[in-house]
Length: 372
Image 1: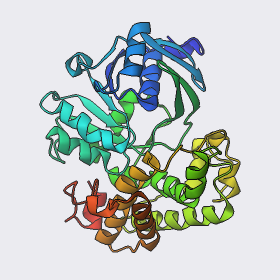
Image 2 (image 1 turned 90 degrees about the vertical axis):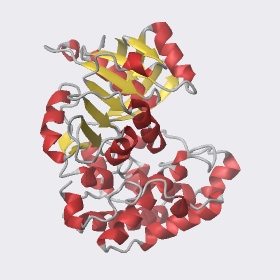
Image 3 (image 1 turned 60 degrees about the horizontal axis):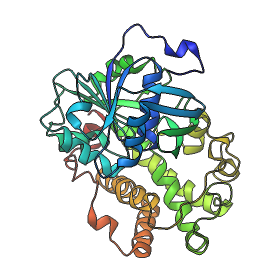
């Protein structure tokens, strides 16, 4: 149990929870839920054995930082049936490219009345999960929801242990698909995530995801530095110049415009960063350099990294094509997609890893999208 706040361990009703994904995010979710007295089982695929093995051997997870202690986990392994035993709530936690494999692993195994939360959405996560799991978009026999971001700034410090730099105090949005179940899902998780907020729809959670706005811009602006130093610099404190900030701002304005066309209130990233506890000021330059939530975060060691593959391939491509669908031009997004494609010798737009078409929503109007 959590040995920090004794009140955190109290709960009148324990929920059986399966957490799929044993990276830093999934490990933090499993720790946090177990610390509140829930029965948690952790799963990942066999090609990712290191962290799962450590959690299984020590029968729990160590955490330090904003949440801390040791939490017992009922099981940790590669058997999906074991993880789903009596599961009432299932968290799918990982990068965008993990959502479909997890959905496929659950196809035919989900039971009516269960709740699945894809965290984070990474743009269209609930759609991608439902498609992979064999569920129609309007099927609500299993409640499927998504969050706009991961609820933690977290890193694995060693197998079986995480450092949580920040558990969000506000600014993480949740929407169910269909959205009439949003309130019920929030009620189910309110003990662990009392600050989680209802979104207007899954389109809002998808567009409020700012990783595609920040990561590719900073990466491309520092491409030579990353390759020349192996990422030996601080990504935000040293990587976000005022000029790089203007690039982030340009992308952000396009994202906000796409949301506005559907009647969605998408907050500028610095404003959301202040609400979440990452940032202190509302600007796109020094606010990132001096953000407490980004302090000490190093750059990636190479360009071949999820900051391009995920945030361009699954994020910016989705947003730019959604913009075309609702009649909003996104020339800066398209420029970033093209430059990233040249640098990485691949065609992110052509690959279409996650697009409105791949999610079966390409024929919907802006109004219909918002009402999903």
